[in-house]
Length: 397
View (tube, one colour):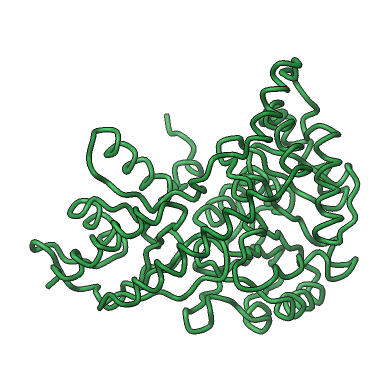
């Protein structure tokens, strides 16, 4: 008996595959260095952990409303009001099991079979698969390093057809680290409104912008854009809470109701204890965020500076998130021990095998000329990885 053709066609996450392989090697005692996982290497701040412990001791261990507690929704609304200038009510919020779950809810609420969803490459690995899971059609705008890995309003308009339903906008971006300016967002918004589209705005790296203030959310441009936008955010990156699995969306009430209804059948409520901890995260001190951001900026600068001194590879300075896209196009076709590097997967597998360094091939991100490094790791590990990269590249023939 044949299993689901649709589910069988979905590719696994290349990021999680590399991370799994790295962790297995590390557990076996190998001196492996990992740059794959998209999670801060900092601990969750103490006041957040204490709120979770208090929740356990207070018996906050039962089911909550499927779309999240009112207390947490109020804290999210407060965050949007104070930080983004956006007025939302609790009826506009859905709390989910991580921002990845929030994204799947958002795409599912919008897309009918055959609907096109536009996003740009390099893209986060799960966007394409999530659209396919919903029987949508991914439409990809190819961007270039020369243009800062960003598409223009003109390029967006050229990609739109009568089947286009929505665009996915990720700023700051995983994997490129690029950030759209307010001017660019306003130009993109005009195209969206002109063609009567929705936008899913993935703002999970919102706090991690290094050289200038974070631009406005596209939803804050005007009331029309707010009504067309599903904002996706969460606490995993900002508060080093990846394992707590809390993400959330803000959208118009009609879309929110659809997402909440579906979630009530798929997963029911997010973890009750993690929800209580997230209230403390959103309402509490932000000192830890600034400390983490300062460390990330120092690591970013050091990684890119060193990487650009290694002949054969190069990297554009990212503006946000905590990733560097390393260009390997000049070393494709070279070999080590008789094995030729033809793809980013070849590079990543050989680098891990020969030098015990785990990086993510960008074949799954829509551009095979790059591999992604995360600088959410110590400076010591960064130097160790780059020392091994220098050796690896020098041995290529």
